[in-house]
Every structure is written in C-alpha cells, then in structure tokens.
Image (cartoon, rainbow, N blue to C red; front, side, top):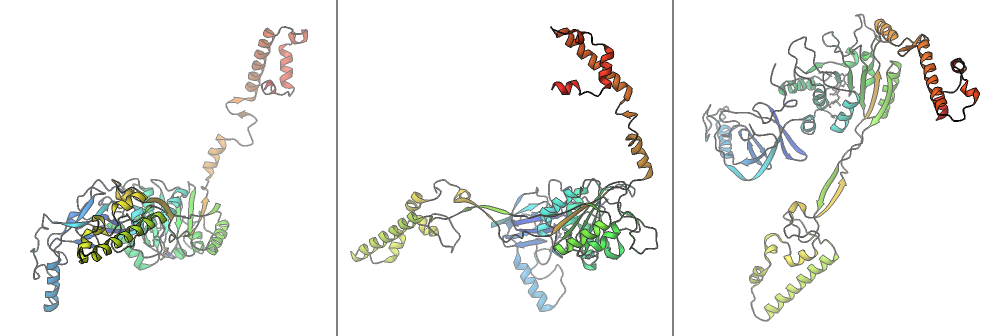
Length: 518
Ligand SMILES: C[S@@+](CC[C@H](N)C(=O)[O-])C[C@H]1O[C@@H](n2cnc3c(N)ncnc32)[C@H](O)[C@@H]1O
C-alpha cells in the first residue's frame, strides 16, 4: 500500500511530497505538492519557492506545519536566480546547480534560518474535495460542491460502496465520491472496499486524471479507465464493478444507459454473455447531470424504457451570501487612493464647515502677516489627516457610524449582506432514478415463507384463529363480570347473562365494546 491520501486522512501536519492547499485569499487557493528540496531549485538557493503577490514562500517553511497555520513570507534571494539566468543566456550553458552567483552547491541542504519578510502571509490548508474543487486545474466544466454533496446524498453513497462515474473530466466529482465511499485501503486483492470506477473518453484527460489519482494517494481507491462508455460500457477487464451508485456527467447520458441494465437490452448487439456492471442484490441509485432540458427529456425517456423507477429531476440553485461591513464615513480607514464619502448629510455638512473655517483661518493668518508660508499650515493639520487623509477626530467621532474610540477595524461600519450576482445559479439538471434489486427464485421463496401472501387465513401474526377467538371471549367475560359487580340496578336479564350469551355475542358481529364505549 502506498501513502495514505491527504484527502482522506491528512494527519495533524503538512508533509513533504504530499499535497497541501496554500490559501492566499477566499477565492484564491493554490494546490502545491510540497517538495523537500536539497540544494538549489530553479535558481533559488532556498529550494522550491512559491511566489505570490503576498510574498515568497520556500516550501521548507510550509513543511511540517500544523494544518491551518499562518505562514509568514520569507526574504528570498531572487538575485542569484536573476544572475544565474543571465549567465545561462550569455553562455547558453545547460542548467546546473553551479551557476554563477549560486549561493549553494549541489546536494547542500536548504539554508536554515530564512529571514521573515516584513509583510505577507498565507494559510496552509489540508486538501479536501471542497477546496480541491475551487483550486483544481480545470480541464472541463466541473461539478461543484452544492451539486455533488446533494448528488452523493441522493445516490446513497456510503462507506464501502462502489460508484461508477463517467466522464472523469477534471476529477472534481471523483475526489468527493472517493471520500464518500472510503472505508479503508484494501489489504489484499480480495479485500473489497469502497471504490470509484471512473471512465473517461478523452486521452489527455484520462492521462492527467490517472496521474492526479496517483499523486493524491488514491490509486487503490479510484480505478480510472480510458473508455468510450457509449459503445463499450462499464466493465473493467471484463468484470463487473458491482456498483450500487452511478453518476453520469456526459453529453448524452441516454447513450450510456443501456449498458447499465441488469439484463441485455433488446437493442444492444453483443455476442459475449451479458455481464451487468450493477450489483444484483441491491437497489441501484443513479444520477445524470445535464445542463439542458432537452438532454433531460431524452434521458428520462430511455430510463423509462429500461425499467428505471422513481425518476425525478432536481435543480440545485446555489446562492452565496456575502456578509460584510460597509465602511462608509469620513473617519473610516481606507485603502490609499480611494475616496471617502460621508455617512450622512450631517457628516458632510460638518466636514464642509470644518474645511471652510480652516480656510478662513488660513486667509486671516496670511493676510494678517503672521506667516505667508503654506508649509507651516500644512504642519498645523491634525495628526489623523496627515497620516491617512482622514479628517480630524473631533468631526468624525461625533457623527461616525461606529465610534472610532477603541473599536476594532473589523468591527467598524454597518453590517450588511448581499448575494453575489456573479454566482451562476444554474449549473445542471439532476435526474435521479432507481433500479430495484434483482429477485432470485430463492429470495422469492424466502420472502413467501416469511409473509405467506394469500394464505393468511391460518395464521396472522403469532396466534391462530381459534386462540384469537378464545382470547376475545375471556376478555369480554372478565369485563361483564366487573360490570355486574359495580352495577346497582342490574336487571335480571343482565344478571342472567350467561357465558353462552357472551359467546353468541361474539359470533354475532357486534361493534367492539372497547371501541363502542370510546
Ligand atoms: C463535464 S466533463 C465531467 C466533469 C467531471 N464530472 C468533474 O466533476 O470534473 C464531461 C467529461 O465526459 C467525457 N466524455 C464525453 N463523452 C464520453 C464518452 N462517450 N465516454 C467517456 N467519457 C466521455 C468528456 O471527455 C469530459 O471530460
């Protein structure tokens, strides 16, 4: 068995030669296989380096970190890299680690004690299907988290199950589905565990998918096959995957459906004996994923012909709601170059008055001959204004939407929420269907002996008919006895009521005394 996938069991810390996700910002995630490089890599004395707009991060600073850790940027010697490139260009010499200006020699360990840069950091996250979906190299359209979480729930993907998936595309669904069915790595050939059988027609995508599966430690849990499933179906080396769940993300799912039958469909031409890719003793749950309603119509038509049941279409409309603080007001700290706007009319007027009074004061002073030097006036500007262009504290504090005294920057401003308009609400239509389990004659006989349909006159539940009657007689007798005891004016007829009468009563269909009394 190879290394355990960080997608399934990431452990507590990052590891060398394993995938990690570098979180730059909410929508900017970078998947990286962390390299424990010895010596110079690509001209960097520090070994492999990730360069981002938040600074440079040698891999060595990211290895053996607790997941979720914040890692500060490092000061990286890009100089040696630049010089080396120059020399290579001049001399046209092949790349080796003894290039001019190199600070390390081949085989030398990565320099320790890297200097931390004055700013910039990233967070290092464990790979999960969710972050992988947002950071993976897109080769095709992919299935996103809101869709696949619902699909996996509806097709009943649970640990230990086998899923057929086609096409593999960029592997977004593959990573989510392998986590859903994971119940450990197989210990031997015969050790049947949860597995994903993924089929891809495009050669390039198949190759990339196979490489990724291996690099992510999923080779034993995901079998990727290069296949046109429309014509060649879903068997692997002629054997059935015995799948209980199926997901088809194909342009024409109806063309693949005949291969997902329990027995050979009439229109399938095949000389070899029919082997179904589905598990025969379980209900099979299927989902197809199609962006257009025309595809859905065709798929449903073929599903009906092939005996799929409980056919249902669902559309998942995902909306992300952005909750943030609206920083409006003249006292708000802002980015350089951005314009401040007043929170309300009062604040605007107060600001204008302040500017006017300062201008008046300035003219009075210059006309009065105090000083003609504008620089002096500049120096008189309030501290806050000098540093970031915001007005004096006095003004902003009185009308500020949030008091600036002691308020944390992230708590300043009015709390608002907006849906993000650029989020696509339609991805695809999901068609779900169910193929009931196949019944063998033995199963039929076993079920009949447990629930003998049509022969229930002899036995219903635990008691036969005679015992039920006797129980009922005894119950009625006990009741009438207690009634007699309690009754003051029991008449002769009532008093003389015999057991035989009671029996007669039972035989005559009469309303149940319990029901009648209630
Ligand atoms: C939209 S992509 C699948 C994306 C994938 N579900 C994901 O989440 O990344 C559709 C894939 O189906 C593949 N495909 C199309 N026709 C196929 C066929 N007849 N057999 C197998 N794969 C096929 C395409 O090459 C493409 O990669």
